[in-house]
Length: 160
Length: 263
View 1 (cartoon, rainbow over the protein chains, first blue to last red):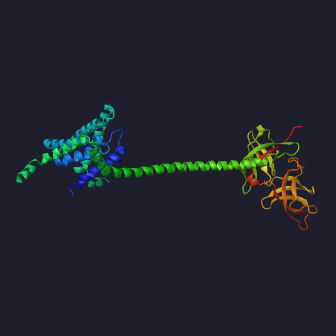
View 2: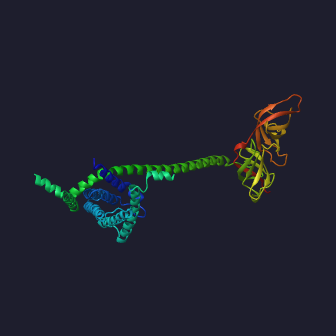
View 3: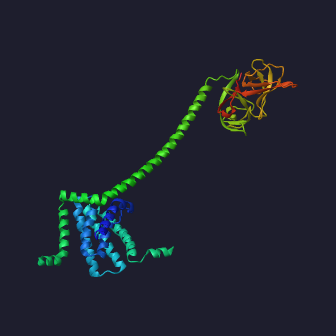
């Protein structure tokens, strides 16, 4: 039973890869949902879970590219583990430091993923990686606003 | 056995990391069989259902777009079909006109009706010929069926034709067989009639009525109509003669202006 939420997260990553990624991309900058979810799990769960979830997310992310699947799995597993330790060492509580961690983590993963795929020009990769990281961080901010209780359904209702 | 349990609980964390590392190394080593199998499982479980959903909606969008383009093509085709049908009918009419001879001493100027006016029946029509085509007032207008009317006003490009159905229009006429004369006019209540025809004259149902040429406007010998009914009222000097017009005034499209041929 405890694996069901992670399975659903993986399904969400798969769905994003197939359906939403192209629909939501803006001038080549796409939301990196896999990295976002791995970082989210690392922030709120244990390091073992973050590591295994990163590994599984890497496999789902590169399901269509078996030759680079291992590298993606390693990158995301390492990202999850690293994010967990950064959180533990720095004892992140502030909303903005969490966002900063997200931004750096996603940017790092975007660059590594681009290097792993290595099918585009470097400046284009860098541009897409940075733009994609900013885009994903905006999505992460919306997620944190709800998760931290800054925005709630009751507050939204009160506006109207 | 306890020492194994202790060892495992002490290093369980590292055991997980080593397992993950080991698995990634196996995947990085890129064994075709292993990676292919893992990829197949991952695609089947996490991608394929969404591919199906995506394809379903893509198909719907494609069908919708195709439907729209087909509907546009259908409208275009039906417009083209109706234009072709119109051209076919025009072709039939023009074929009927082909070989139509004017009365002796006259030439024909072909014209097309642009618009007709009238309340219940058309009483006048505008044609696409004007003074630039040497059209002038009081020229007779005919088609292959018979007399239509006369020109009553002319501009540079257009002319207005007073049809025989205009109650103010009169045609001096005679019965083709007996050569007896009368005046053809049109009443809204009675239709086309031959007026002033003496009761002792010879006229029968089915006789053809032609223009007599006496009024000076219409040349003689133009078919005006056919006698459809004759009544002989008591104590009246004239009989009531009802005519069926030679021309169907509701469907005039192509017509001819009679122009006197120069001597």
